[in-house]
Amino acid sequence: MAGRLVRLGVVIATLIMGLFVLGSLYKNFSHLQAPPAADAPVDHAPPTQQ
Image (cartoon, helix red, strand yellow):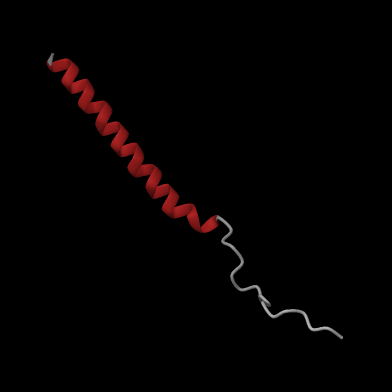
């Protein structure tokens, strides 16, 4: 019974550490993803008729 508890604890600890590593990698490399172009000029004025 104690062996099962140890194995379960190791599995849970491994999953938690894996989530922590994935979160760290995502934070480190999220700046490589192209953000939406917010600096592009947007013209909301209706077109003028000539």
